[in-house]
Amino acid sequence: PERERLRRRAADRRAAPGQIRFLGAVPEAELSRLRRGAALALVPSRSDETFGIAAAEAMAAGLPVLASDIGALPELVDADALVPAGDADALAAAIERRWGDEAAGERNRERVAELCAPPVVAKRLAAVYDEVCAS
Image (tube, rainbow, N blue to C red; front, side, top):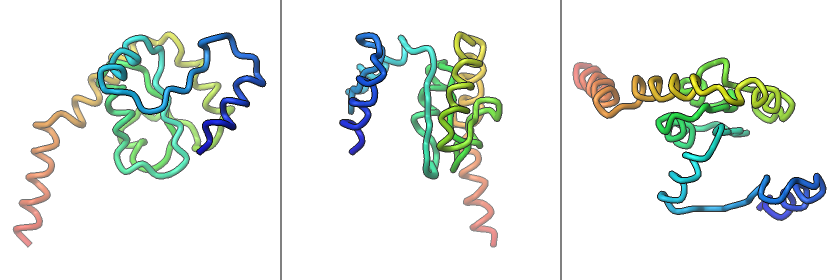
């Protein structure tokens, strides 16, 4: 719903051709290609995320991720990569800090594996079932 307003805003800023692109939905293969060429992944949510799949997938791809400190994102993304939801200035400052930090991408890959790998999730889920069944 915001696409046209954002296109006009980008045009008003006289961005270099190709610097700002509005792609909409893309197939998985295209998304993977785009991730490989990205310097950062931004997840500037303004409402609660129940998990943060976009952040998790970017982390698994080895990208540095910056996200809003809302919903479940703080459970997934390192605290130093979180910004207040809706705070564009904080997001801009975080982009400047994180730009070119390849080590952050590797840390993210390790963190998402520690938190979200199927064996890890299965073990935690089994523990919940065990607790529920025992009560």
